[in-house]
Structure formats: C-alpha cells, structure tokens
Length: 316
Image (cartoon, rainbow, N blue to C red; front, side, top):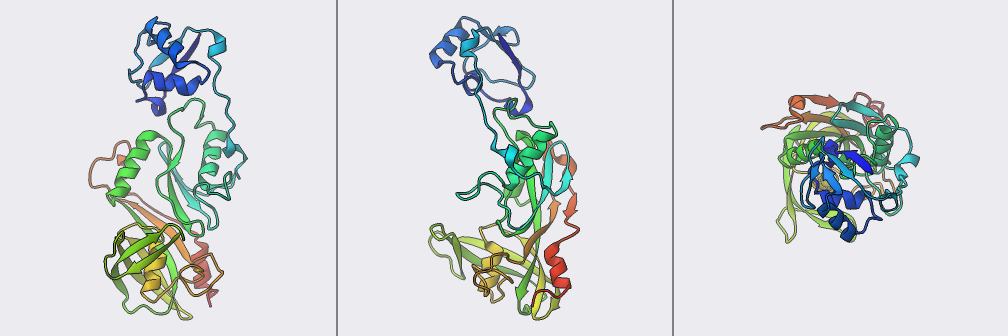
C-alpha cells in the first residue's frame, strides 16, 4: 500500500491523471478496475477516475508493489550552475537578475545550464521544491528576456502565483523598464514611438514598418533620455507592448540602434547589445491573490554593469 498527501501544486488534477503520472507501470485497465473495487481511495472513501483532487487530500492505493513502481527520474537541473543573483524572494515568487549571455530556457544548443535550470536547482537544494512531490507543477518563468540582454526575470514558485503573474503581464499591470545605450542624440528628450512589427520566424528576426502589414502587430515604445556621452544616449525604456526584439528593432528603425547590437545595429558580429531590464513595478488594478501584497512594490537592480560602462565612457 502507498499513500500520498496532495500538495497545492498537485491539486486540481483528476484522480486517474495523478495516478498515471505517478505510476507508469500501472496498466490503465487495472487502475480503473481497482478504483471500482475501492482499492484506490481518497480520504478513506470511495473515489472515481474523474474526481478532482484538492490540497490536503490523502490518496491511498492498496495494490501490489510490482505495479506501484514509481517513475525513475533524472533531473537535468542538478548539473546546472549554482550561480544565481536574486533580487527578491518570498514564498511565492523569485526575481532573478539574469546576466547577459545566459538563456532563460533551453534551446537546441544549450539544455542544462539555463536560468530556469539554475532556479530549479536552487529551490531543490534548499528543500523548498521537490519534483517528486509536485507532479503537476515545477518552478516557471513568467517572463523572459533575450539571451544577450541582462536583467530582471520573474519566476513563480507555485501554480497559483504563475496564473496571477501571467494574467497581470497580459493586462500590463506589471510595468517593465529597461536601460539602453543607443547611437546618436535623440530628437526629443522623451517620446512614445508607435509602429508595426512583423516577425520572421525562419530568420529569428523582426521587421518594423510605419504601416500595418499582414501578420504584423502594433508596438508602442516609450523612451526618456537620461544622459548623453561620446555621441551615445542613455535611455530609460518603458514597454507599452512586449513583442520579440521590440526595443532593438524599434529604435534601430527610428535611426538610433543599440550599441553592440549585431543583429539590428551597426556593429556586425557583436552580440551583447547595451540593454538591461533594470526596474519592475507591480501596479495591480484588480485583485491579485495570492500576490496582493506585491501591489505598489518596485524593484530596481542596484549594480548594472551596462550603466557603469556608459558612465565610465567605455562605449566609444
């Protein structure tokens, strides 16, 4: 006999789905038969395959050990680097300061050492998250930034928080601000740029147009000039829309490409664009439980290498 207590992250699943994930060697026909025979119970009572599990429920399986062999798992995140810069953390979320050069998620070339892998290893090592006890959820990123862009990325520690974060990002109730260094002096000290962006997935590149084209989406980019030095401008960017490569492509189309942007800028072969997601503001307009306590909070990266390079005149 085996017994399990349902965690927050496993709640909301059907009984049969939970069992199938946990015990891949258990034939479905036998599982349904044993449920009918009351050899699989929830809270000491008869259950049904389509019944939904709640937090704190106890599921018991009175079956032979040979069919209750749990799935053997290998966790790739355990070999990820332990290097992780945490800007803020509580029981629901973690704000990571991602270094430029690190992927948020795996791609075809890098699988093990990514930001999400480092976060999973961190939470696993400190005993806060156990994948064996959370079949339905693993720590997840609510937003992402390009590999060669540094800055704040939000990670959710539980399913409830991830749902709220996804909703609030969609509603633009989490404000994201970037610092960037561009070529030239801006025509205005502050402005809101509008255009349309088309994404070519085959080339992993986007194109900006003043006119709406088939398949294009509107982009809105607000900038404020903070400083000028050596023919370069330091800007604060507020994204009003969040499209792929929006800041890089939009400013390049406006005649002010980012410094060291080898894809949209002037320095071909350089792929460490001067761009940093440095400030985050939670500005909820409606209920956000269980994250209501974050409303009005603002988080800023205190030591931004890109900003230091600009102030020291290293961008020539």
